[in-house]
Amino acid sequence: MNVIPGDTEPTENRAATGQTAASPATAPVVSFNRLELSRILNLYGRMVSDGEWRDYAIDFLRDRAVFSVFRRSSEVPLYRIEKDPRLARKQGMYSVISASGMILRRGQELDRVLLVIDRKLAVV
Image (cartoon, rainbow, N blue to C red; front, side, top):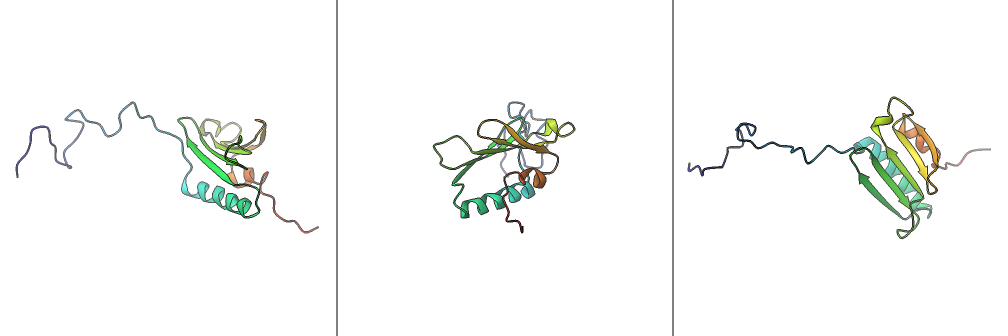
């Protein structure tokens, strides 16, 4: 096998050659896990089928993850569903924020926080 200078085998230690898998320029970002995203997209699908919502955007930032819901893509988001792990021990890492910037609900459990915008039919 011919080895070209500078090439390394996949099994070799990259730290010894000065290469690192994650450089300091790429800081870890906050994201929704599969269960959280599934719950949010289930709600989004129901609201789209009702004709209330039409578009969404997902932003993964260093300090928080944001799922924005739009009635039209050219407008400001109707709701922002945010996950901010820094608030996990204080007020809860999940929050729903309205278009005006008012926090509608904040808490530790995503399902309970989403109830503020999840309009289900209730028997009266």
